[in-house]
Length: 357
Image (cartoon, rainbow, N blue to C red; front, top):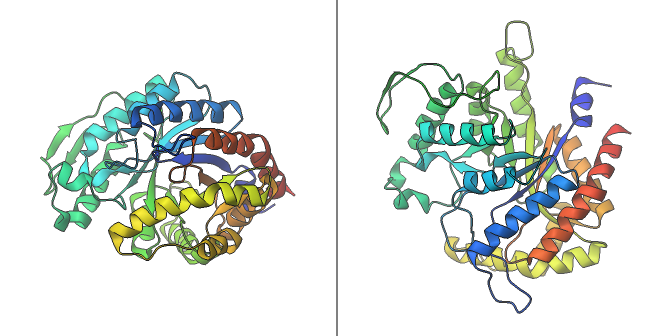
């Protein structure tokens, strides 16, 4: 077995949600407070059925309930035992890296070392005006704050200066974590070579977001990620260990392919079309949806179908982690619970068996 195959056999299989505002059985939107309570219940079920990780996205808009993922994760920590607790993503550009690190170090303590964080710029930008940041600084904010966060992971005294926050002259962050290498961290990447190379330069693993198109078309980014590590000496004596690759894609699971697609379609379309109105996209069609389900990023269908597609995605990209974004638009809580149960009890065992075959 090759080193890459060995890593894939130990793959981490997680779930992800933005806390999408769901609808009840009458079609009415559920209050955000109830959605947050439902997310805690969903994560608790995920822990019980053997899912490895749960990540929560940060948003500041009315179609997603979660604006403070670490608060919800702390509630989940009190009701779970083994599942990793992370964000997908934390919008670092519009937050303070020191405060972010200390909040997640605290979450790591109360969860007995299960906290992790995925850092990103955010594909939604509502947090920038909300917290007083200029969109003209979109790139420089993330670059500067990511550099600081990378230093904070040493958990030692920090000497740093930048343009967007006050300098640090030997201060430390508290509490310290119990991890030898600091808080477990990923960087969310949408698919640009510059972003891929930055993860290697920072020494922080890459989580590749694949939300459209054939996952195999992202192989050049995965190969670049590994090549850059080779050139930097990762995995050789005197250098850091090689970093894993994670993948994030949307999906839904039901007993049959037809049932899963029918359950997902109306909610997927509502979500996609609302965002499309904001961004000038044409309305999506059932034909586009079916194409994404057949050969694109949607991992939707029966447990066998979804497991096969996840295993193919992991193999095509050489990934060591796959997170399924199980919440898509207005889908009701009971269907999300059904999908989570099938993911843990039927999909995950199938994926592991396929990768070990």
